[in-house]
Figure 1 (tube, one colour):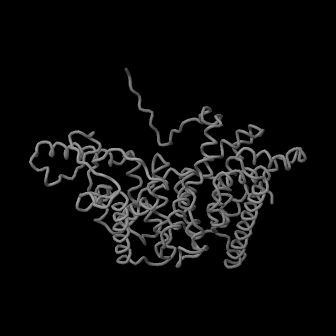
Figure 2: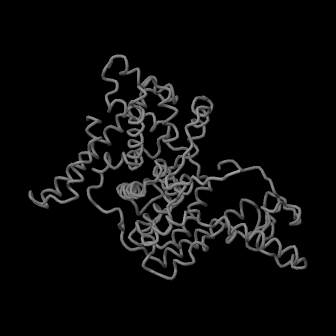
Figure 3: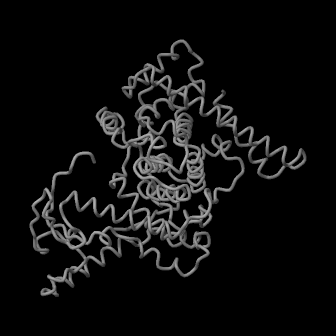
Amino acid sequence: MELLCLEMDTNIRARPDPNLLRDDRVLQRLLTIEERFLPQYSYFKGVQKDIQPFMRRMVATWMLEVCEEQKCEEEVFPLAMNYLDRFLAVVPIKKCNLQLLGAVCMFLASKLKETRPLTAEKLCIYTDNSIRPQELLEWELVVLGKLKWNLAAVTPNDFIEHIVRRLPLPEDKLALIRKHVQTFIALCATDFRFAMYPPSMIATGSVGAAICGLQLDSADHCQWGDSLTDLLAKITNTEVDVLKECQEQIERVLESSLREGRQQQQQQQTQRGPSGKGLDELDQSSTPTDVRDVNL
Amino acid sequence: MASHKSMLSPLRGTRRARRNLFGPVDRDQLQVDYQAALRKDLDEASRRWGFDFKSDEPLETGDFKWEGVPETRVPLLYRSCVVAPRRAEGPRVADATVLTKGARVEKENLPQTPEKRAGELEALERTPEKGDTAGLKRKQTNITDFYQAKRKVVWMPRKSGE
């Protein structure tokens, strides 16, 4: 027998398994167990003394950037945020250790989900060497203990395929929809107001927001309109009003983050003066194409 | 994650991802906190299982009744690599266990990254403090470093609230 080594630098992945995606039991099971992995308290109102919601946002944005730059799997960032929130719900932490915690959470999430996980050394570099690999490994153990080694948390990403496949969507648009949903989910993970929401609700709201944003419902608006929300609500057993509210909240968060981005851009432009068009700026002006697609 | 690049880039402007967010870390305090957290974990585990993991003895007050099982009667996986003094009369067996266990752990800890990739990343991954990076891969802590326990009762019902 001849053995061929076809190993390449790209990650080989399994195809979506229709047995898992079409069986309703899988979705129902996910819905049953998802609550187990929610943070137990809104921790800024009790447990945490030194850290503030805006600091969570800072560390979250940083984590997202690291995951992007390292081309992590999509679920690594939301999963890492789940670890972070669950830890913060039980252990008070000082501001100066928050980035260490963020790095530890990425380290764990990456190990759980990726073929080639992030290394401790690399993560330390991303903190500008403010932490050492040894500290990362030590605190990994502490975080694991506090999470009771329950790492395989349900994330909003787990629901995407289950929801999307139950909707009458044009096949050629599925990839784009998925991409937008993932982006909305990441956005929600950076915002503390979503930290206590069940993952299924965030996923459902994100699918709704993505479909509306892409105006896939515009051709026959009357038919989709409310019925999209109804259909979505039914798939994940969410209440229609709650879902609507969630979707609107997601859209508001996107809008404000885009506005903030534009302001930042303008600030940078004025700082640099009209003639100072740097490389960064060129890069920026070419990036928000997807945002225009969302059409706010 | 290419999609985020375009849609979420407004979130961050043109900063570098490599940055220190909240100023210098108090190393000594961090180490103190770490030791305290481990001790607390161990105490909680002791209370929960009614077993003193430090002295390797059952607690009088626990809910469980502990029973010793000879190491040879449990699967290899459950054998401890820490040789307890009172088992010293059987050095043959103990040595064999240590060896097997050691070999297995070693293999598990081998980095799976292909050589080529590892080489590429080396420059990036090297931290300025040289010397302490060399032994890191091996130094990753095992749970057994802190819980020097032998599993004597193999199965137990899980407590609720997990």
